[in-house]
Length: 449
Image (tube, rainbow, N blue to C red; front, side, top):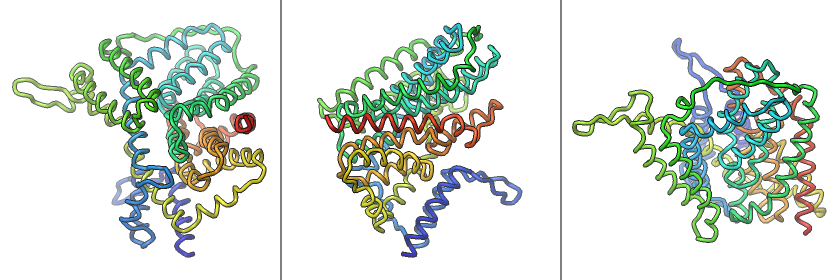
């Protein structure tokens, strides 16, 4: 009992420190306790206290109730590398610039940016969308003299909504798909209409919310040189073409019996090879130069693409896997799961959506999804879809619902825009609640067909 209480306290302390990233001063040197350092420290405490062992850590990443954590790690970090490589080609930024500057009024720009953000999210990830579009929206607002908030909020919300279409859109989708043994096609079929309803609900809600703030006339001229965005056309073409092939491969993976994690490993290796071949051309610095006989090979671009992967998340994700494993061993997961034995499936669908969405803002969406995927194991499919809905839309309730929110607020701060939880919730809370309701009703309706 004491070990359970200590573990729960350590878990929430970890979540708090991951969000806050406090600074400590040791011998006049400031050290930021980022989520990697915090996670490693907590993992050490769990081992030192005897609550966890090396065997516990090993079992935490081994198959559990259809969930295979080590495969999830490959899927997450591999897809991050593939998407980052595509982004490094400059293609996404070029499309975004062209798309954004084609609007002549605020309402058209609003709809154009939402559509662009949605499409980019479907084929890449919400992190890529945030990194690519946020600076562009800020530049547009500065040139046109408009309020960037309606566009920034809508784009962020969009990236956490369209991400439900395919299970590669969000690592939480992969977790649920694994837990319920859903193939790429099965997942897409189940989530198509709930995602579509969520998109329509949020777009309509934000349009009426911000209608008066969107200017009737707009003149946006962003000065940029295409050569500065696309450094090498051959690399951009090959990178884009390879990504299309990658997406087609994972789409037909079910039919050719090629598992998602294997596809991602294969294409990650191909992208590493591609980035290595073009590294000498694409490198803008001489930081990593390799001497090969009489020639000097600049490997800086290759190293940079690898560095762009959020490797700091690895110890954090592993630590949360360990926490979930401990909760399972201590019976916490089973206890929570028993609370979801609803006789009324309509009530079960609605409650699961809202509980998991709010739980994401207490536990952060990834560990929350791992926990509830095990707690709701063998429940009907509507529970799985509600968990997907909650894990994605939960990131739109507060900035701590997903790591993307924390990252986004830091990007805005860099550009002089302050975004805190109070301000964020004022803009998104009502839309998130409405989106959860309409999408949950759709999930329930689908489950009855």
